[in-house]
Length: 121
Image 1 (cartoon, rainbow, N blue to C red):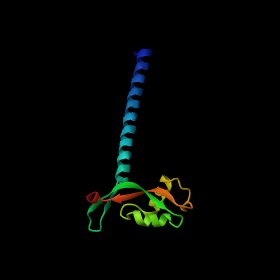
Image 2 (image 1 turned 60 degrees about the vertical axis):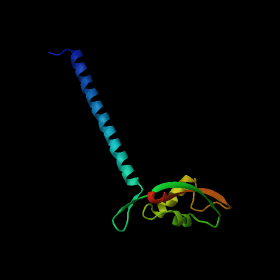
Image 3 (image 1 turned 30 degrees about the horizontal axis):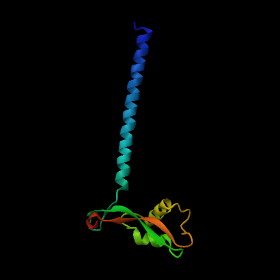
Image 4 (image 1 turned 120 degrees about the vertical axis):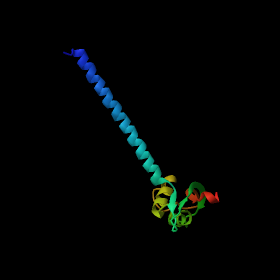
């Protein structure tokens, strides 16, 4: 017959094993999720001929006036194969902390992302 201390030690050992397994399961899940996010967010696109094109993402500072719009900027710098125009506008708004799609009055500089194929870098 097991004593109280032996039963308690056995329970503690099983709990540690369970915690260790749960920890490794959690870590494995996080690695898989991170990998999927990286795969989905990669700047690769499939061209009409079926080949995969890769684009590098860069940022630059541009000067805008109150006559400009984020839609015009998105149509100039966003590549439809890589990013949707609406997503591009949301990213520009986030980067520049803009609360609406209207640009402030007067001349101002904003940061915008742009994409270049590595073969042209």
